[in-house]
Image (cartoon, rainbow, N blue to C red; front, side):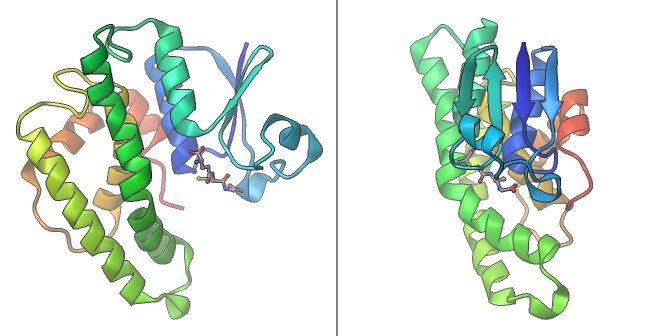
Amino acid sequence: MLTLWGRENSSNVKKVLWLLDELNLTFQHVNAGGVYGKNNEPLYLSLNPNGLVPCLQDDDFVLWESNAILRYLAERSGEEAFWPDNLQQRAAADKWLDWCSNSLTVPFRQVFLTLVRTPVAERDMSVVAAGMAAFEKYWAIADALLAKQKWFSSEQFGIGDIPVACYADAWFRLDIERQSHPNLERWYQQLKARPAFCKRVMLPLS
Ligand SMILES: N[C@@H](CCC(=O)N[C@@H](CS)C(=O)NCC(=O)O)C(=O)O
């Protein structure tokens, strides 16, 4: 029995809910964190001592860290598209999980938390500008890749697309001035044709 803990509006939880749906897995979902609380209670802390979401239970096995959960579910599924047998194909897709966490998370927080979760009077727009400049630099890297291949994961949608897409969705839906990245925009349109992406990621920004 799979159980996923974590509030549905967290980017790190969205990634996992989306993959669970892509893999057609049956699971129990427990909203936790943010307004739902629970994540600082003893039961949850016994699963994830960091008190952060998401956290996955697979019977007695417990796993936290969203990217580790994505890798675990992808490999567990045995689906070639999500966890290619070929080591180099797999690594080429997998690297985008780390790239996303290490490159996009800081600018995402600067732009998203300011524009969506901070009252207008308290917003520091210099923080937003710094985040947008960093994003544009990273989107240029992504755009160059997507000029050569259909998805971050190569010619098929896969694990490499999922974390980046959760940030890109907010980027494309925020009321901001964006530079043109035609290949990134084409990829975003492809994502919108996936029902699980629409259901799990394209929630009202909150
Ligand atoms: N590196 C962790 C980060 C987890 C994290 O920061 N989760 C945030 C939500 S995105 C959280 O639990 N915040 C506290 C809360 O939601 O109450 C992961 O990828 O799982």
